[in-house]
Length: 204
Image 1 (cartoon, rainbow, N blue to C red):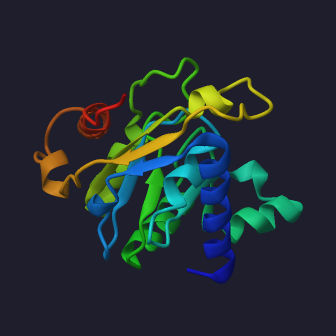
Image 2: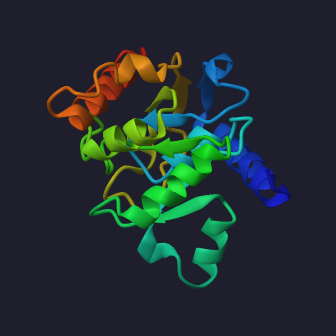
């Protein structure tokens, strides 16, 4: 991890802790080495830093390709962001992502594809199923709670005092989520298994 990335982690953690009573559970479930996909529900723009700020790994992220311009583009590149077209996972992006995993780094993916409008879990998209099938890496499910109330879709300013919580679940080995490569609608079924694992993580 670069010094800049570590400082960004610390700043994010102290912000969330001071303003949103941040709580993190399940840190012992995070693999200490090797590649994996961190799969979480998606409620807010705060989700990536909240999910990554206490993770002792060099986590990589997806970011909309239109953001990679000017000073903002330089900033998010230094935070391990990978440009992606939200409408499709193109071949160039897939190669970049597989390269990150091949080099032993973890990758954050939101199976739902976009932020929830009402704070509830939505259907997973096929993209993560394709990514898992191609990479053959384990998946660490996580569930974030409270970020919809802090900075949900349509909210401009964060609501201070609202509690934010992240919990990491048990690692799902690759063979447990893609047990039959020949099954019909393979990628969608992989995605649904990941969403099921996220849903099983208890929330208050």
